[in-house]
Each structure stands twice: as structure tokens, then as C-alpha cells.
Amino acid sequence: MKTRLIISILAIVAPALWLKKTYGAASGKELDWILAPTAALINMVSDLHFVRESGLGWIDATHNAVIAPSCAGINFLIVAFCAVGCAASGGFVPPSRSWAG
Image 1 (cartoon, helix red, strand yellow):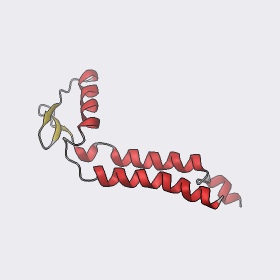
Image 2 (cartoon, helix red, strand yellow; image 1 turned 30 degrees about the vertical axis):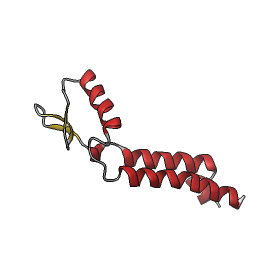
Image 3 (spheres, helix red, strand yellow; image 1 turned 180 degrees about the vertical axis):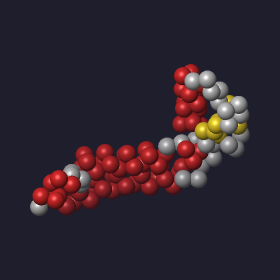
Image 4 (cartoon, one colour; image 1 turned 60 degrees about the vertical axis):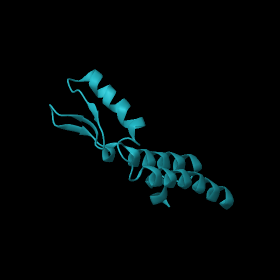
């Protein structure tokens, strides 16, 4: 049981660390795979019109709006992946169960 838990934790932590290391200081061009679809979706459903600005990400100068690498959602992706992984591996104990003893 303990070996299984260690393997599960490694299977969760290794990809999370890789993502954080790879995209932690990424530029707008390196994050275009996630920023471009976001900009396209916003362009379709709003009056904003984002264009790619080299080194910055995506900008709408008319509305002073920026979709920047720091807002790409990579940290949220990492946290969500870890939470789902912990829940699936049995490493997460709901507070109601842990407080009950």
C-alpha cells in the first residue's frame, strides 16, 4: 500500500514540476498554444479584438487589455492536476472524514 502511494505521488508531482519548470518563466511566444485560443475565443464572443504583440502576448490597445503569459493559467492547471491526482490516488481525505476521527 505504501509503495502504491509513493508511486502515485511521484506520478502526480513529476509532471507538475516539469510543467512549472518549463512554463514558469515562458515568454508569450512559448505560451502561444494556450494564449492564442483564449484570444480567439474572446474575439468571437466580445467586442474586444486581440492581436499578437511580440514579447508581450496578446493585446487590445483600444480597451487597454492584455492576455499576458503571467495570466496563461498554467499555475491553475498545475493545481487542478495535482488536486485531481490526489483525489484519484486516495491521498486526499475530505475534512469531514478527517475531523470525525
